[in-house]
Image 1 (cartoon, rainbow, N blue to C red):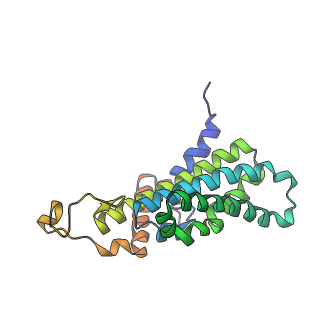
Image 2: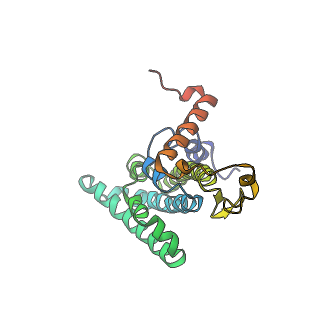
Image 3: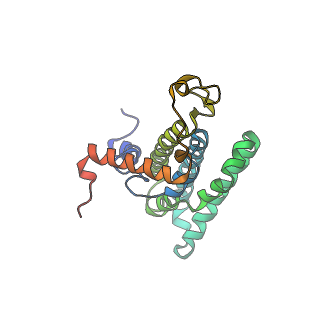
Length: 215
């Protein structure tokens, strides 16, 4: 017997493409603009959101029947804030320099539209297992876009990946730099992320015409 039913599997697969939180739902754009100049920061943010959304969805689902409707948003904020504090402390303990780079953006996970949206739209109305799958699926969909954007921004803007030179040395003029290639400084500023996300959206809709909204 399959580990996941078709419906359960769709909770993970749909946000990866046809219902992606960034390219389809247009949520979580701020972090996609802010922290994707480096691939390492993009990967860490993706993993952080994966933990917060996966665990947070389960917690909200478990306590959904005892949360007073009038304070449900406050309860959701408390849950996500507690999880973000855990992420922040782990980063400070094991990746202090990176934690300084992400600094305020880790804290802003608390107000990430994707997380609060999944709490409100899914976790409050479904059991823990489905809520967990939904959280993992949406976090992976979000993370994939961050990693793609971070990959191209760092590669084209700095000539590196994870801080390692992959196109050559721009000072010693080795690799591609020996034939006149220069880093594109535009790629390391936030507007470049918007362009890369726009290209991803265009490619996605070109492959699946059903995603194109009617005017």
